[in-house]
Length: 147
Figure (cartoon, rainbow, N blue to C red):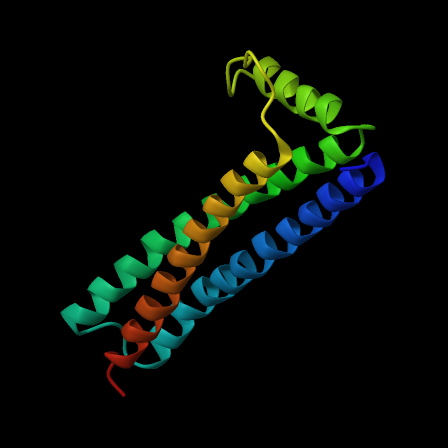
């Protein structure tokens, strides 16, 4: 992979991560801010299933927000990698930063870009699963509210 291709691919992936971290977090924050208003207007959550669904929605909302924060952090790390001329120096810069922040020990060899992208895609998949659970639980809680 040429240096320009490496920088373009890394920068593009960082931009995608920022978008993928922002919109689920925005939906969760909007849903959580509207839920108490809707519940009080409809007489509260009186059904035990609605309360259980609301608790599941709250737990999954926390997971979505936490994973979104991790994705934003990863996006910043990919931007740091893209600011370097080649994959080796970009990976070394990220590894050095993580070691200095005491988040990861300094590795003996730097991971490849594809390995780093694969790890971040796993985080992205977890965020999507947590977001799906949030949406289902949130809609379920609204379904069992009295009319």
